[in-house]
Length: 482
Image (cartoon, rainbow, N blue to C red):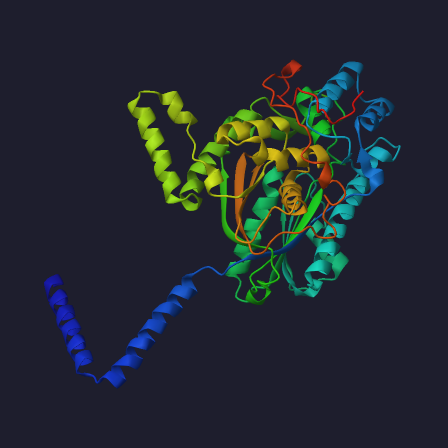
């Protein structure tokens, strides 16, 4: 049966070739051209539609929201929730965290009430979300009714109605707007939101615009207890929000800043240590907060290794991949397994700019050590941590704004956004610049970019007392701390 089918197919193919040869040239040329056009159409149909970052905005809170060590100490003393030992511990962590004296705190810190409430959480969310979205839509020349998708990410605050509904109501978006609310994603939510928006645009027949809004909310998650693992978040997390507008509208390519080249998400929650590295929980007294365990930095390093192993073949040039294989093979032949584990490809061959997760000085140090990055590569991450603190999911956009404020991005440059999240997750967005960068009028670095890079100290390998995760144990030279 199979032999008969093969014979019939061969005879049909031979007959078709004979028939084509018998056709005159004036009839054969249009036929071949039509076939080629059909093949091209199929290829283009299967090719993913390009997605562009039209523009983005980062929230710059009012000056009366600025917080320094003195303000933190005043709040800690007046709220009467902390013992002297706890206050000393937070002071130590703050001084060595990598944060400067101009970060921003949530509204309830300045209220004089010293209580975290739902009203303060809503106020914090509205101040960041509404301002960034309004600025973004205005400078992008996009009307609210033109936005087809809204993706809002906030890990620690998920009210009802949702934050996405608050934005739809505020800006009068139409009933057909599709909204998505992400919670519990941690600091990776910004890059995850971009990935989700791009996928939504590509599967939609009509395409259009997708609004990605990322923030974090500290008002209900400020920790009033004595657990040192949970006190660290009070010292490093600060207020920040960002909004990004992505589109697949080909006509807007000339207005866009970047093209999305690739996204990658890896989830390492199958490992207990990774899952429990950062967890929202109650302490023994019932106080709610987020605990950062001593395994956090180690988990971040292990997760990053697995993540870049998946990403590398898609972004690195062939020459660097071959160089990496050669180095690994040479180490194996030399019988040095530890050297093999320490070898990583040179990702500076793949990207001109990197927005590395700036969740804390220890995390930045760990990434720099693992990836063999020099001080100039991690400069934007350290500057962002110093100026704005850990703003969670929006931090990669503050780093991108730093590059633009410094006018470092040129057309054709490749940029890597890398963020980690609870669970434990790692997420990458790879972009290609479509034009030379220049700071927008609402760039949060406009008034301070000239002060960076600051004279930052070398990485520290010491650990804090009391079993807290290693933060930063060297003083910032530019900070005038008591």
